[in-house]
Amino acid sequence: MSGVGVRFGRTRPLRDVDLVVEAGELVGIVGPSGAGKTTLLRLLLGELKASEGTVELKGGNGRRGLASVGYVPQLEASERTFPLTVHGAVELGAAATSPMVPWFSRAEKAAAHRALERLGIDDLHARGLHELSGGQFQRVLFARALVSAPQLLLLDEPTSGIDLRTRGEMLGLVDELRRDGLTVVLTTHDLNWVASHLPRVVCLNETVIADGTSVEVLRPEVLSDTFGAEMEVIEHNGRPVVVDGNALVEGVA
Image (cartoon, rainbow, N blue to C red; front, side):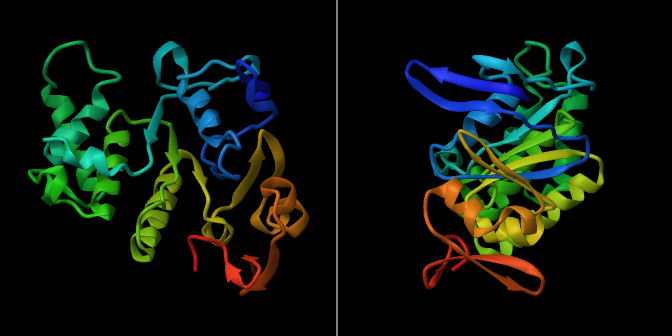
């Protein structure tokens, strides 16, 4: 992204955004509600066009020679009421590249099974979505995003609404995908999860406030500029821990 801005009438969720993500990186985008995080993901998905500047996804196996993109949205309880099996839901991940026919090919069905196996939930393939736990459903969303073999994976608040154990499992999964060569960009409100586990953190509030390692970025002055609130940072086992008053930041307490 170079000089990127987005306007919706008088609203300007993003301005002067310069951001480069290299192949194979794992990057966390943090910022308050309304900071433009989801808008940034929509630009990378191609759902929005920049009003200013340029957005490029260079090189890849996608259409027009661009990098192919997979997307894992925030957990929505309403999605689990759809009358679909796990396998049926994962097959939908092939829809973006599948010919316009009312069924999926044998190869696409096999790709869905491989994605389920990779996520360790192939034994759930015949279950209805309504039968799944939050963590299991999160894995279904990951599998759906991986069916089309993306090079860039976008995750919108992947730890929202899941317990600490499942959060740790998701972290391991994301790191495994990165080691396999996938580029991963995620948004999160969980500053301490990001601080503890991600190699690169970008603070965003309409524009990029800071970009670097957690130690470089998660500092009181940077967090104040990003969130508009005073925060303290202490060190634990060599990692920064963000504290708001006497309580840990929401999501970690």
